[in-house]
Image 1 (cartoon, helix red, strand yellow):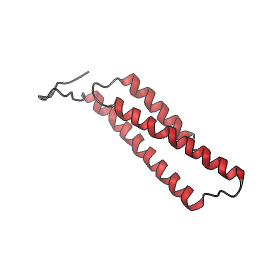
Image 2 (image 1 turned 60 degrees about the vertical axis):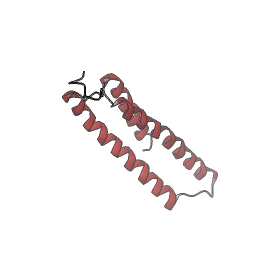
Image 3 (image 1 turned 90 degrees about the vertical axis):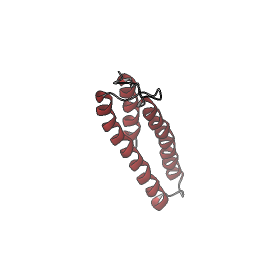
Image 4 (image 1 turned 135 degrees about the vertical axis):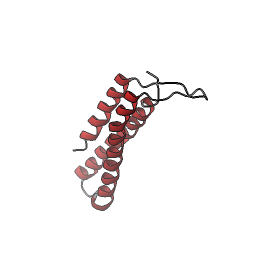
Length: 102
């Protein structure tokens, strides 16, 4: 639902949409932090001497490749008009992708 349409034809968030976006922004920031810390950890402690170590790094790379598009999709669905069901689905994908790092 839209509160109003801006003069230039753009759409605005409703109060409900605004309330929905705040936790999503928190999730996006958490995801960014997770990727940053993972990158730092791999750069400082990543080992590639054994095949199992290479496999672990490959798995991290695959997870990171999935996480970035998931966040992009979430951000796109936060633009008005907001479809709460789509946002909920995208939040689930982001959370699931983050959880896979642990």
